[in-house]
Amino acid sequence: MTDLATADGVRLSGLKVAHGDVVALRGVDLTVRRGELLVVVGPSGAGKSTLLRAVAGLENPCAGTVHFGDREVTRVRPGERQVAMVFQSYALFPHLDVAANIAFGLRARGVRSAEARRLAAAAATVVGCGHLLARRPAQLSGGERQRVALARALVREPKVLLLDEPMSQLDPQLRVSMRAELRALHDRVGGTTIHVTHDQAEAMALADRLAVLNDGVVVQVGTPTQVWGAPATDFVARFVGALPMNLFPADAPWRPAGVRPPTGGQWGVRAEAVGLAPAGADDDGQAEVVRVEPMGADLHVHLRVGGNPLVARAPAGTVDGLTGRVTLRVDPAAVHLFDADGRRLP
Image 1 (cartoon, helix red, strand yellow):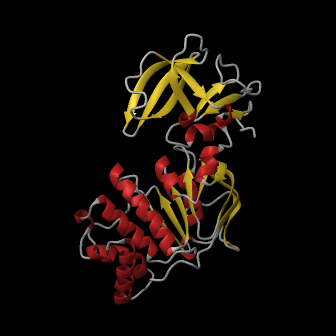
Image 2 (tube, rainbow, N blue to C red):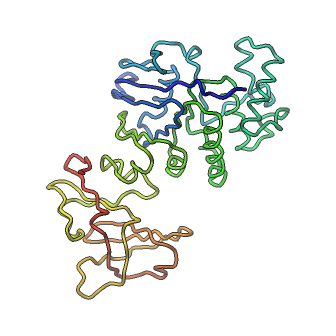
Image 3 (cartoon, rainbow, N blue to C red):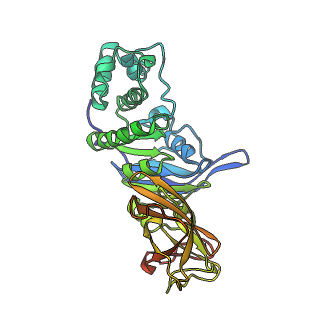
């Protein structure tokens, strides 16, 4: 099995997909660089899976184009696009062993049995399941089934690899180890990968860049650090990150000194940027502690200030036994401003 250094980049231009009166994608413009691992995140119903299916050729757009490199493939049949897709369910054939499952697509395309088995064994070795070739799916763990599904996709040597929440069925501990293996696999094999997930930690750990999708529109594209640190809209601020950004209306009764949000707009601060100190007698930045959630190395401290909820993230042990009222410490430089339309201000 060769690497995928000949992979193509993907470019979507004005892509619109509708199912009757329901518009799933609303003129999406998105470029995936050659050899990049792009992760698409967004809430349920945002259009993430539809986007993958449009790239694969399983959805016919009613407007716009799809390009692989310099080649337009908008109307090219799925089997001629040199793409491979891994679904949430893995879709393994229970009556076939691992080798036959991996080789199934090759055999369907007329590859001789011995050659298909050789290529299947090579692909299985790449993803770390070469020792499982004689087993059937019922004899595999969730992680092993995922590896088989990946091998079945890679054996075709696709120019573009599409992953639709392939780790959603794994338990949390296995997801952590598998995302590291998936990132290492991408770096080793090469190719262009589009990965859809709901898992924020998975997205941040895997992505070269993130594309945030909402209601069929790409809201922001950037590195994980860029999207988390400078969200383009209040939606991105709320959606991206283990904790949503704390957002307050411009007329909230409390805000850090020196912060001047625009009329009708909002100001926001990440939980990590909220410091806590003992309440002072004359301090107008006091907040009421509602509850404290132990999260291992961290604490999530839920507060209420001026009638608005706020969450602070603090190292475990620094605020043990926290109750009553505390003083908030927020550096104005850590505050984000959003206009009345939800757009982040520079």
